Length: 203
Image 1: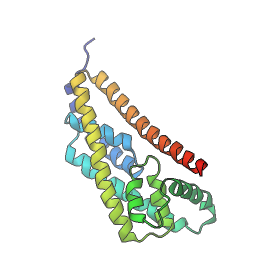
Image 2: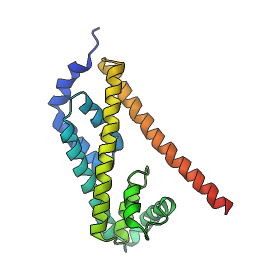
Image 3: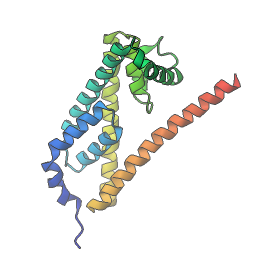
Image 4: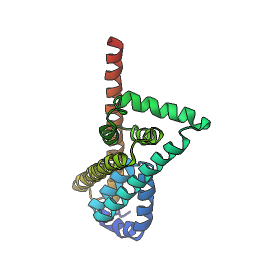
């Protein structure tokens, strides 16, 4: 049976490009690093347009962050949200202990700590962090974050092309790269948690 080459699947992906862009947008609203990496890989083989991926991702991230900020501001005094607020506050206090004193830097760096950004954005709304300050921090962080993850995906895609021209093998490599990168993020986050826990125990 003839094996499909990468160039044979590009027209199919291009034909469904707008469906892919819609998935990308909603994934960015929910903070989907893996989807952005995959989009970067597809852009590396010209199945997706690089400019489209960047602006759609950026728009989704910014709108998602504003949504979480607004959510935090409206549930601040609601009894049903106490557990959600307490959980988010624990994460922010643990990873970003100076959040109240240095909200700008805390909001910015939270974007690059796995699993912490949404809690930080949500708590920004709960604490009513100045909207202009919040927006500037998130805007800057989102630009860097989108470009960084896009470049990671693009690099992975270029690397995969050099390894194989087989479409099935390329898809497997794409999945493998994404899983490896997410695992690396989680490992670094857990390593930070362990080091911080040891410091707290030694006091």
